[in-house]
Image (tube, rainbow, N blue to C red):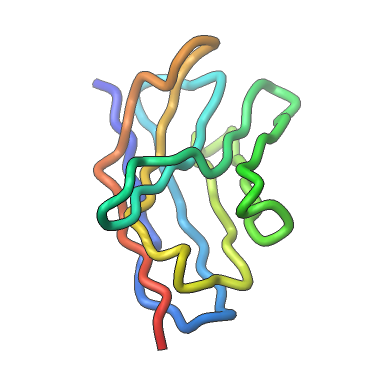
Length: 115
């Protein structure tokens, strides 16, 4: 059975950092990524990592602040988030898939950036 489970969300002050983790089980995936959904907004792409070489893609609004990485031995992907802003407040979802669309999704972890 395939499972994708996020962890690491929480409350952080503006300018702070947080690291999200996503552990996949049941199979390995060509690509894993992070999406987020803020209150009242549609879910949006944040970052993804793919292939054995670990090529990465980022949304423009997180580039140079967020870093996605992957531990293939643990089948786990991380999202290091620095210089967090209030507008980064959202539920962050991990997704995993093959060459096509992301097939498997986690339940999400809430990140709140506030004083």
